[in-house]
Length: 279
Image (cartoon, rainbow, N blue to C red; front, side, top):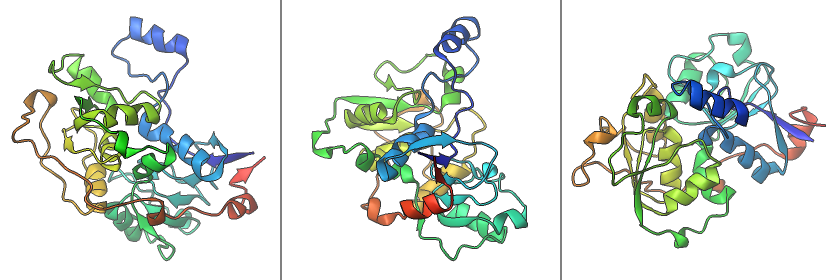
């Protein structure tokens, strides 16, 4: 059996194409494994339901968990933690009437659903499920240490920085299994991140994080949505990785305990009855 969902993986290519592009077209952004924040869906679903995933882009009746993918919602979808980028909410009221909305990433996404007339009577949480990385990988935070300072860039930042980084910072690509990202975060005394899930994973693993402004046109809306969900205003971002100042940079930490009890996920039986789990 498999559980129907959707997560963004349009830039993930075969190993052959990955190395071909890196050699011939280094400016082209491709993933070998996938963007950690998006492919976290796979392990989250395995943890919750012990099911594999079927990644479906253009059909509804799916369980949507992690990512800024409200533009991809279709009829009958179960909204369970996804968020908006700010200007991507479908305006189709008949579509909205078919959704079951259990949770959203944050209050800004909730407000957009409200404006579109969505039924929020079943809304149970406003958090990003990426905050469950500790639970999904059974991570012991007591094994944390403070050996390094790392930077988790948004994937589009690589074409701007072009491998030119401060020497005392370890750059960690999000093109990895999320568990490997977690291991790097646990070895850090502080994390700099322009990747949203770099911020989220750092907070979930009790590491201070400094928000670095993305070097592309990545919407700030989604960062603000997340920070508001954990009771924080959007911090003043470091303008770029060259402008870091360990003495004055504003660290953010998760000052509340958020775990599985703070989320809601549909029962397996219901997902089978509705065809979200099939096979």
